[in-house]
Length: 296
Image (cartoon, rainbow, N blue to C red; front, side, top):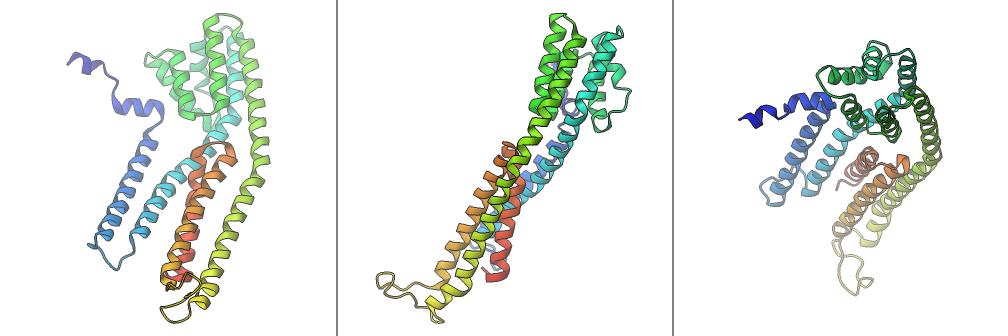
């Protein structure tokens, strides 16, 4: 019983770590994906008919996961990018407060009353953790875990080590602020350089889809003819129907869209979470193209 009293409250922990929205998104994503997977199984067993194929339901499961989580991840990336831009100003103000004679704790509490735009709520969370009894080190580590960027993680490590060493913390904070700005500039430069590769991946994906669409609309029907028997002799004398060939191209475009989206996200910023939105776009376009143009 006493052990349970000393365990951190789950809701409080979510609030402190800024994971409430993430938790809700993950639950919504899991529920939506589970529903479509269940429908796919029911369709495969023949319990549900005339409402789509099992593959359609599996595609909808993928789209629900990548759509819900992808939108959340995209908004988080935008938010974190803005935080990265403002964070050096926060570190610089901490350095000025330290030079004015404030302790590190008081400097953070004082900074929480300022206006740092989108970074203000995060600073207030740090201040709340400190006021609730957490150490400054724990509060800063929790902050770095919430934003999850290399720049802020590295800067927080420098700040923590400087506060532990007992040296001139103000000078270290100035160096950390300069370092954070330089890292942000390097990341922006890398992203700009890799944007062309992302464009190439999208062009290649759409060209592949266009070729498959031309084959399915003109070439395959002309080879198979209007009858159910076609391509005789070219396949060792066996009879191949158009209905047997089109699904193969359909599955190929879905797999190609998924793989291209995965690679595009890695090229964009080296993070797999960025692949989610690209997977959603490419898989959705391929799925809609086959459903509308070919009626598969």
